Length: 323
Ligand SMILES: [Zn+2]
Image 1 (cartoon, rainbow, N blue to C red):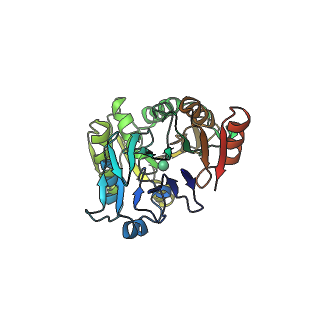
Image 2 (image 1 turned 90 degrees about the vertical axis):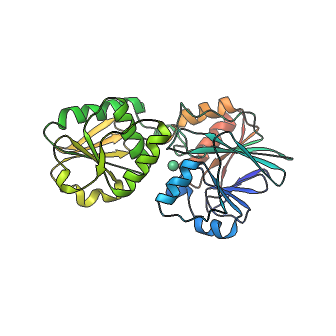
Image 3 (image 1 turned 180 degrees about the vertical axis):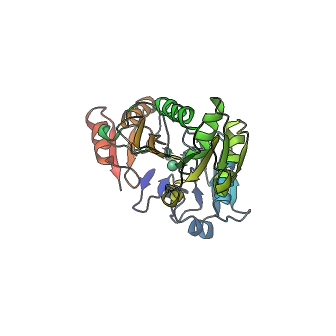
């Protein structure tokens, strides 16, 4: 068995590597710092020999409160190879959040790869693998959002330009996403003062180096600074009490399928930003990748069975959904 997905979300690759959840193996890879990929990390820290991640992901993990002793934390740059017990392990770039990676394991029995979470375009497919484990958050076409992320970014900038002169703005999202949006807004000339909660701010400083973009005037959020001309970036978990404050509230969400931006009421918008490839983009990745076999990760996505069926019946690729 070259690869498998376990019921707890562990992705087994080769004979030594497990990614993104716990399994009794010497090498635990963390593809990126999102919660559903750092499951049971403390147990892996206790039992595994190495916790492998990109330098940025290790920094993110530290900021998010995961403690990994130096002797076990192995920072591996993109495209650098480490060898463990006759297997070569490589982290390859993926476009998802700062530091996110795909994992490639090459051993005597063949090659196995795991995409982790990814968006297309911008994630170079791993080619000609024996087994590819693919994230399929949107496992069927009807789950896909409308428009592209560029449409969504345009809609967000439009809201900022129209509303910012008279009102402060608050943008809610997940770790990684918020930092990417801060960077994208600066690239597009948004000059407002940025405010951010403590964790969001620390992650933003790391992300700004990763993307090589100066995020300009960013300060720790406090209510008194929330005035017109400022935009606060807060983790989505903080949205409930905040929504009562007089401001324009913008929720970044992967589940808004009505359009790039939807106005919920006078002061609340939902903007459709997904961190994941659409169904058709996953198919595109797999077509370019041409693996001998595909395992669709059913532990995190939706409709993974449909994706596996589509691959088998339409593309004639040996595909299963696991677990
Ligand atoms: Zn993720």
